[in-house]
Length: 607
Image (cartoon, rainbow, N blue to C red):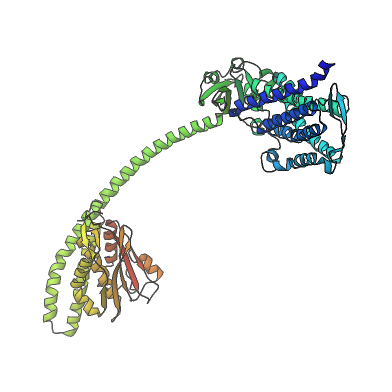
């Protein structure tokens, strides 16, 4: 009789010690990242078991009731811990158990615990407290109140849902995991069997806490003995199942423990025949995968396999990745096989096309070289022709330009004198045209070099204004130089040629009493130079064509004072300096602004 009375206490004490052991084991393996809900389950079970021990051992009724109340610190939270563990373990309801929504699950347990400790005022947990005997010990045998049944319904809903999740996943495991499945199902059913026995009054002793201790032990055994979480997660990833790549999991004993449908198609074998087999027996057509197996890092290789009766060549990228725990212990290997046959064929096609393109480019380069040589020869001939033509034209023009002014001065007949003036002006136009044409031809030469150096723009502008003072005075315009000391990298004579051309051009198209302003602006590593007047202005078409060869702004085109090449020469000179030149105008009658850029010369005398 005494021995029978000691059995419940001994079992509960053993359960307490087992809980403490489980807590220690989980703490030692915390680096493996086990679920915190599993620890919550063990701690809740420990509190229930420990409170039950004191309820049985104490003889004072007040202390027994206090112990029973303390038990609810574990009883109320076990269903939440069980449901949360099963959800996290199977990968279901993650949003509920892994976010702030989790706190909604513990509302009922918190209310239940509060009502248990304040039961004397409302009787919602125990409507009436009675005592019964278990051998030589007395235990509470209360009549339960209304909220107790609310707690029972809520707890059983959580427990049932958790069991459905974990048992359902255990059933779906392949046959090679039969022992593991039995462990999971047993761990899920034990608390139910114990709790049904107690609620049906089969026994006065409540074995439910002991059943939860046993369940925790079985789950821990499954986790650490069979490594259910580490090598084969129960929560099968839907993405992996639907991958076109073959995925095979091999343990450290070279045994295939898992695979997806794509792997079945690759190996041409059903999963049931492959799971549990040695990898060397399965990867017969692809031994290269096994050669990569022993690597402790991620390795990959492209292989060619002849498939089918016809021996059709198929190309695959094989990757082998070690599966490690957080302690860097290798648990197995993940073999991923990706069919790259289409990619390989596309690469081969691209390689052939690149080879053809290379040959085509080589031929094209030869043609370009031939055409370039021909163009250079033509340019050389053109320049020689222009030089010879210029010489031939200037030779007869020189005596004409010398004799015509003398004849004009001595001639007394007004009509004849007017005709001589026309001839003289046209002769001068011909000379200017020849000179400008030769100048432009030289500027078009690719090997033409300028005498670059540091020049002060203000000084060059002042020189140009002095040289053209008679033209400015004759045009009766006001010219204002607002340029300070600004140094640029340029050929002084060429820049002066540009300025002279632009100044005389502005004077020509600015009415008497008009105004011309020269100024500069900083533009990063360049200086922008502008010549602005309030003359006849330009329309959009004129702005676009003003730098074209032989283009003249005046519509009559009878102006023999200009060759029509002045602005074209300016453009070539500025471009040879690496700058830009352009025209701006708001319209006809609203003035014109010609701007160009030159590179800055820094303080050390370098660009």
